[in-house]
Amino acid sequence: MNPQAKLIFITSLLLGTTITLSSNHWITAWTGLEINTLAILPLISKSHHPRAIEAATKYFLVQATASTLVLFASMTNAWATGQWDITQLTHPASCMILTSALAMKLGLVPFHFWFPEVLQGSPLITGLLLSTAMKFPPITLLFMTSPSLNPILLTTMAILSAALGGWMGLNQTQTRKIMAFSSISHLGWMAMILVYDPKLTLLNFYLYTLITAAVFLTLNTIKALNLSTLMTTWTKTPSLSATLLLTLLSLAGLPPLTGFLPKWMIIQELTKQDMTPTATIMALLSLLSLFFYLRLAYCATITLPPHTTNHMKLWHTHKPTNASVALLVTMSTLLLPISSMIRTIV
Image (cartoon, one colour):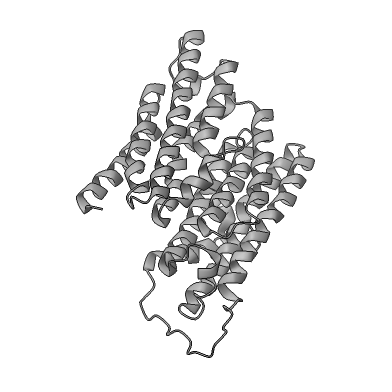
């Protein structure tokens, strides 16, 4: 892709996100979401492969539908209450429509079907943007409207997302699809706590973005698109494969890694809200995700590919690891001891 074109698209992404984050009016928030959608489409389809074109088409149709529903919900609310302010969403029907629209934008169950297919058709770096940056504006809108949202609807969607995200990722062999189902599962945790402690949702999203960025950039460095490729990486980049193991375990939420922090705080908050059965269900459902993270980690670090003939091992690549990968991996594994400071800041 032309560097000037890529610069325009990345700038448009930043502009669209900034407009949505800084807006108080529904029309400006909707405009920011539309700019975001149009800016990411060329980045999805830049390879001109039929799979990429299909992914871009699916993404456009889903996002256009969700944006229409956002506009419809805000108009219905303005019609009933005379308010266009984002924080003044009080009409019950508008709240339900808006929750569905933003769930569709995020890829929450039952509107999750598009996300794994779109991620599978995108390059790894675009997949990283789709999993993190593109979810920030809808999460922010949910954060701003959280007092008005229906807790029963969100809890149901959260449990289904955690269950299906873990269940459907079990049999996958493509790393991008595994990361897509991982994203759906994590969104379930964010939606679960949204009504009770919205700041905790944002903390969860920040840490998820951090760890996911580390995983995607590592996979991009070793060019691993499926598990069979991942099995051959140990002979080429052993140190990077070892750090990938730690990052995946952090994404699974195992202590004493960074990923344990949001799960710990969410379960604690749910227990305070007398929702111990719900917290137990969520904790058990995270075991499904743990299985396919362990499968990825096993392929990356413990398994060697079967050799039918004797041949020399591949040379280690002495290309220096990107500094951003090193920084992200460090933060993805070592932030738990300063959890109280992080919670104070957020």
